[in-house]
Image (cartoon, rainbow, N blue to C red; front, side, top):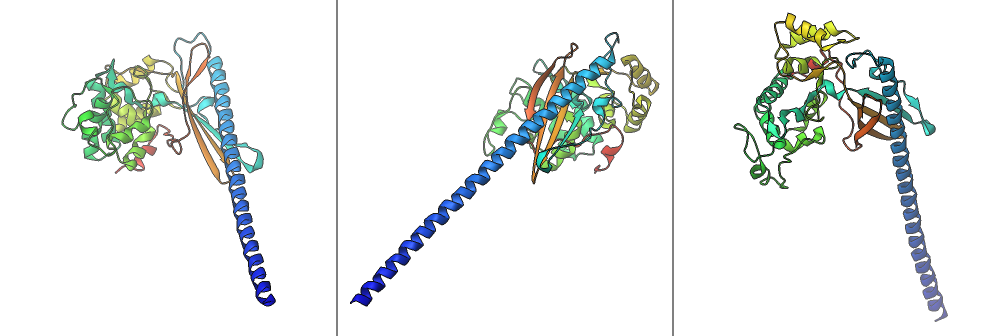
Length: 333
């Protein structure tokens, strides 16, 4: 009888030890997860503040650039030979991290919001966008359909453009259903809602922007495909213009017009400039095995004041910069 009691007591002790062990193991695992979660949150916050530091650095560079440009120049000139456009040396961070900052000019890309003016479609701009898609070698269905769908996305009415336009009545049939924005793009990523494949979106991304609809094209930073599409010239002629502007760019609109006239073309109704008010800052932070990219869109006033128009930390990176040369041909279909 006593042996049985001792056996039961032993089993009870073993059960208690097992339960306590399981509970302790659970507590340890939870604590490890909590520590890991806290560390991840700390790294995210660190990356955010490092990225903001990159944005502040870019603001200082842009202010200095404006001061160096002089106050007595007739036109604001911004080109790819200036300090802001040059690659910055990576900054080493604590814990083996690294911060990389670069500044780009979105005014040198095709402004998607320029397809409308006062919420009404501009047919000439739709044609220019279609020419850009053709120059980039996009598929025929994209060339024909995307400009009309984008115009419908931007304009105020519910009347589909052309044969492949789309308004609420078509988007409401999607799963999940949504409506046409009927306003300017807040970000280029809205193109994904217009039945554009991810591959085509990535192909187009370095050549387009989403700026205020009246933002002029900066011909000093525009790439060959954009110049060819906007001014109705072939890519070879656009390359001649890029070669003519060199690293120092055109110093006035008249200089650009002269070169365009020599090619037998005219500026037409294209709104263009040799400078820009808008800049895009890409701050890339690497901490351990984590990578964060902050894309900030800045507006610089003539008085040197800089306003942050938008920040994006959720697109998984920034578009590959286009140098304005023939690098756009590499992925041509």
